[in-house]
Amino acid sequence: MTIRALERVSVGQNGIGAFILQCRKIDVHYCDYSGSSRGMNSFIKSQLSQFASKHPQIEFAVSPRPRKHPVLIGHYINGKQKSICVKNMDSLQILKKVELLRDASGEKVKRVNKPVTSINESVRGVWSPYHGNGMPV
Image 1 (tube, rainbow, N blue to C red):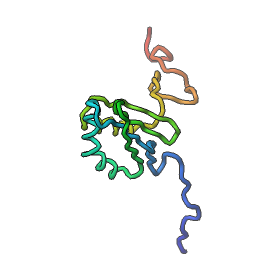
Image 2: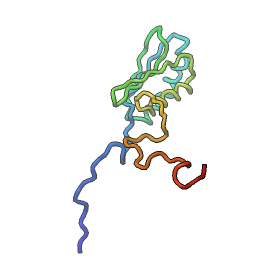
Image 3: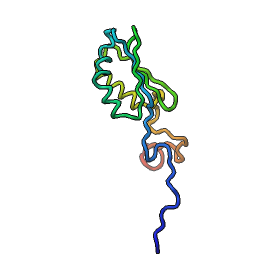
Image 4: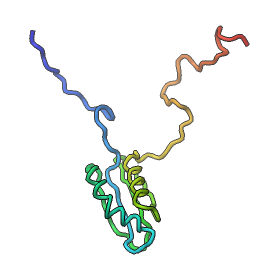
C-alpha cells in the first residue's frame, strides 16, 4: 500500500502559524537645533540603523521639523496611528519608546473588568459555595 500525500494544502488562518507584525511604518521627526531633540539626534546617529536592519518589515521615515519637539509616530495595519513625544529623552529611552510602538497593535487600550471574556455566558451558571450540598450555612 502506498502512502498518499496530503491532498489539501493547509489554509492560512489569522494568528495561527505565522506572526504578522502590526506596525508597518514609524515616522521619526526631529529638530537639528533644538535642545529637546538632543537625544533624538544621538538616537538617529547611533541606534536607528541597527534597529531598522533588525526589523526590515517596518518602514522608517526620518524627517526634520524645525522648531518642534521630537515625535515618534507609529502607523499600523488597521489604519490607526500612535504618536509619542520624546522631548528631553536620551537615546536609550527613545529606543524603549520605539520598541513600544513596534510591539503595539494600534488599538486603544481597553479596561478589562472580567478576567475571562467570552461571547457566551456560562451554561452552568456562576458557582458559589452556598449552592448545593457543599457547606451548611
